[in-house]
Image (cartoon, rainbow, N blue to C red; front, side, top):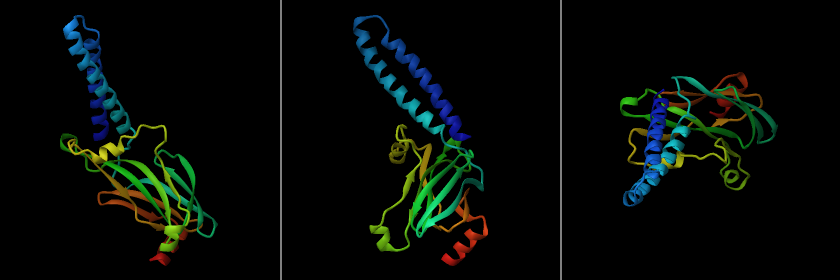
Length: 213
């Protein structure tokens, strides 16, 4: 909820800046018009940037301790090639072709600080990838990595990761440990206070994990 409150506050700030920018740009007077025009355009640019950030933050989901972020089911096509069906928290299902022996799900985590501090971060699924156990295969064989951010989407994550002055927003990448892929195996990825955990759901997944360990 904290990140949603922050985003809503940011949008309210956007509206105020837009009003200020409009009044400055359309004000009468020659000398002040240039000064106000410069300020107006600066405010307009700041408005656009703040709006982009607010809309991006609203795309993150608030979380609960132990919440299932995603469920994955694997069907083997051939050796070291699997179809992975991923179902997210909204119930949306997508199928990805993963190569290798193991899989990993990466998640973007945003934690608010200060007055808007929350126990658990808000999250967004980042990418799904496969990995080979053999180091030689990992270096030389075809890789399979799928990002979940749309290509035509304005992504503020790279900027948030590098920002230092905005201390009220703490961001980090979370990753569930690499888990073995096996035909018919089902896993759940859960978010706890200690971080992301991938857990086997059915017998096929448990046997795969036990044999891997």
